Image 1 (tube, rainbow, N blue to C red):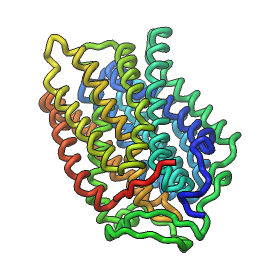
Image 2 (cartoon, helix red, strand yellow; image 1 turned 135 degrees about the vertical axis):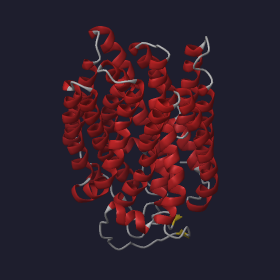
Image 3 (cartoon, rainbow, N blue to C red; image 1 turned 135 degrees about the horizontal axis):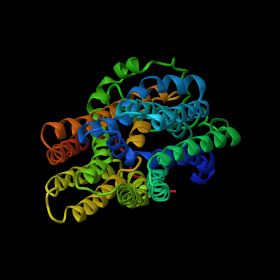
Length: 429
């Protein structure tokens, strides 16, 4: 039986693969929009609040270094349970933080744990989902994360309204991590529930990431020793330098949007509950498009999701840059927030799908760690760049610079996706 014909449905992985991820992302989504607000309440300036918000991305970048090794050694489920435990400790640090420095440390640890959790789930989907379903499955996984980031801010807004403070919001993340851990312990281990493709299956048509050549195999692949992150980066340096740079710019634009919108709201005087509400509504648009993105990538190719998404993110940042001092700046903020969510939603699952396309078998975790490192490098650098430009010039200039970077990223993706991750359109099942 070929990989394309292997019996599979998204419903078969929905509970064990998606529910723990949903709980974790709800907790994360509940705190991310309020990090600048909490930092500001602790006495941080606008620029310092931006740096603290960037700590979650920096933590994810650092977490990518050991995550591939950890997942390869202890398995996806154990890695996610450990990441949930680390997150609980990190959130407690945030709750008791007496100053912005300690808050930043807690947020950094949240990012570290998020990297391990996300890579573990990504590795499972790469190993066990057939190629013909890949983009839809990984876009659905991206949609699950977005669902959490949609629900989380609404929980935050409700708790702030009921309690009058932001500290209660952090407890949502703790409860969600406990729930995710319980689910992971009680539900069957996905890696033991779903069989990997048999030796006589065609594993996938993908790019040889060291040369850029297309390869296909119908035979079992020999066991590959587990490599460290930097050894893996060196082994796949060509694709990571070229297409990986494009992935880094995608990560940069997404992270810039995540940090820019709360900072912009603080800058133009929108209250904390209103900020959470606006970002939550924008998250609904983002979430609603996840399966559309997967359908586009599986039917037409990865490039047809990548380019509209990147161009939209760049254009949205550029438009926002000119609205700060307008009398209707709040209305413009709401409109641009929704447009950025539309652009981001069209690219749901893109980075995970490209990583899965390029990852070698039978042990993709080390490469996925390297791939996520390149994307998360952009995710970590962009908020720091936003904070630095804001401190030196203004938030509007920072938004304009990020918009220009986004359009440059679209050029890179247009050049290198067809070379390294070509896709032959096929029948959707």
